[in-house]
Length: 387
Image 1 (cartoon, rainbow, N blue to C red):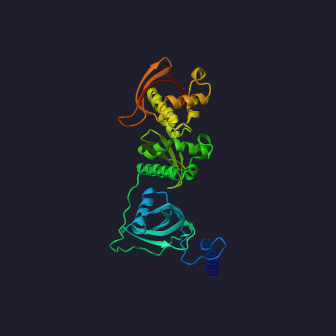
Image 2: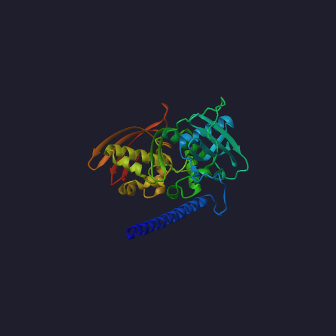
Image 3: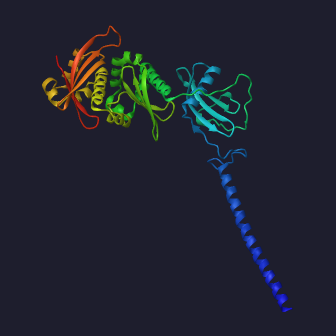
């Protein structure tokens, strides 16, 4: 009897312990759920704490579109269906499980004052699109791309296909865009120069205008002949070389958000230094002659003068002004390297060069002898025959 009572008491105690444990677990679970609910509620309110609706997607986030293929494909469809003179300036994108949505800001032709806005949606599974102009919009970021649309029906005339835009095409786009600004909007072109480069090469807008006046014909006829691109941590770097062997460096943080340097000697970028250091000595000498010619052709006599050997300057050109006057009267206004013969003598390289003042068969021609010494890194000094 005593044993039976003892067992009953033990069972009651065990049940009570189990109940207490269950109660504690239930309490902790409720608190966790409440915490999650509070977190979700916080996500569903704006910066003032006001609710923004039950249908809000807590994962919603616009991204700035930096993919050239997507950017220019969307622009082309808007041109075809809205206005052939439409120019896309910037885009946001929102990717969802089925629909890709783009907020598009642009202008018509050169009218940069009046902006037009669109929502452009693509259904990759159906290869279809829809577009709608947005009224009463003040900025790209104010366009809400969230949607309940899960499919875009094929109407027979809304088929969509991305057209690939590669690095070479981007280089052509950047060269042509900047040429247009140099020729038609020089103030904007000046503002797009890399800040450090601008301080050294064109300290004032008047310096830049002088360059444009001297170089206008070359700018008009410049076309891309080779390129190199590399993705950096914060930007994409494009090296552009034109038919006059001019080298440009474009650093892009967005499709149309870029800065440019108009030569490869004022500031030596890492890409150029790597390529230069991999050349043999004769190739380095030829690369330096191209750079010297670019200095002369763009009337950058200050940098050209700095590359002259000290003894040569003392004997022939005591001042920058005397060097500038000589070059203007004894070298072509624009010098194209037509031929070169390089031989090594002692610690120097003797270069017999043939220069032309144009690319055609009727171009004038002259011969010069350039003597060059290579120094550390990309540095060099030189002299040349003086008539």
